[in-house]
Length: 275
Figure 1: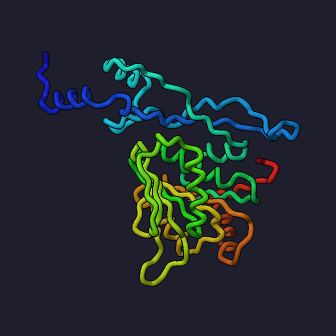
Figure 2: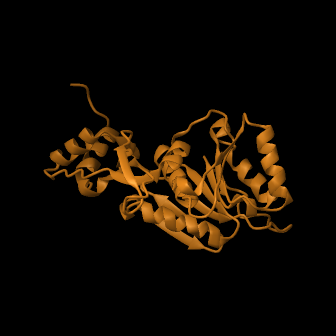
Figure 3: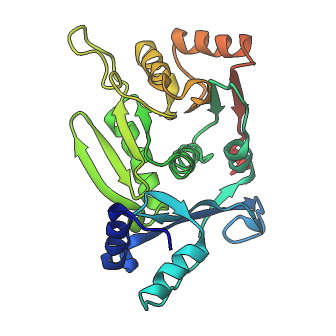
């Protein structure tokens, strides 16, 4: 037989000692689209469950996703029953689903404009969650005009994901973050007006993607800081933002700029009846 290194034998011993019941985290998510049906109670009708499963079984020890069969084999080797349970199912309306699953290479900004009650905040939360599942060991950002605004997304994320998905949390004056089991850190910061001494709370961070709530109220300096956080991600870096269609001159100028550069910007409009 081929001799094994001391490092390989040490790894095997560590795998035998680790508690297999805590080693694997079920980070699977699937979307179900609901159509509006005013005759139903509540006013919605579930359609077929989307077949794609986001995420997977996360192995805390190796720091990577593994097949369900590998997780089952690890449990069997330790004499522990493996009970996978159901995939987390999240309900979305059709326009949310279309925006969540739309992929465009080279897209810098995707803007959803809609009124109150159309599901904008839930859409932002799900955009962040899908990014977390796709990009382990990285960081992404949630920006609001104030702390109160980013806390709206914070609570929406916590409402969707099971507590087992979250390894740790932090809440502080410089921002909040959620550290997920797969190593991804979701950072929540305010985009309030910068000062000459400190700048914005966004500066100095590196993100693989970002979402902005009520973007029409976020200062232009903060908007530029958000764009600059994706230096490592390159063309894969995309900012998803939502807005109600009112605001000042900077907001109107930004919309016109998006319209003038459809190769890098996308504007989507939702109707209240879409929800």
